[in-house]
Image (cartoon, rainbow, N blue to C red; front, side, top):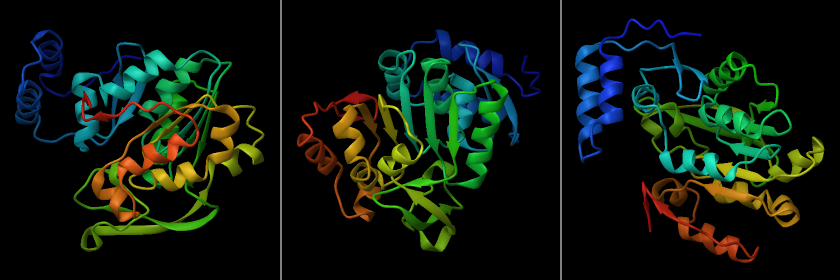
Length: 267
């Protein structure tokens, strides 16, 4: 499937992104150039990656616009998927968003593997479902449910001045938020109820509820000792009453080795 985009200068900007040295400020300049050439970005655009995976993206969201322009999103996580995911692995993904990493996981584990993805935000869930369909993936189990410490229901909030990926179970900006009630489950409950045969990899990017979701994964982690990738930041973790360093302390009792990243740099 070819992308018949009418956007201006995209091929040229991608060429520059690929061959210009990655000096400080380069990508910002290229983003500004693309915005100058394209005054209005479409809410629905097909992007085909170098690996042949297809994505339907809302380019009004700056995160997905960057992915569209440069071909990568979160280089560190992409590296992990490329190097630590194997054929036939079973993956749990908390915070699937529009399915960019869901599709990468599903491609990496192949037909013998599975991806169990969780995304409570309706708009993101439906886009993720679309991205799974257009890639012809039948090894993805997409759930419009949030992950937490215990089963139940909770409010999910999204914010009018932030990308969809900042939706959270905590209302960080009450004056800008909208919310709805969604179902919450735990990794342990889900694996028991769905008879998931094992778990090899867990990725959590759930805007503050990472530690509660880990607490809901104790059985799974003790039984299968999967690779776990967790994204955390000071603001959202504080809203849940913990610090990112508490996640490292929590893993100590399971005899895990932890590697910590700050932005793109190992710390």
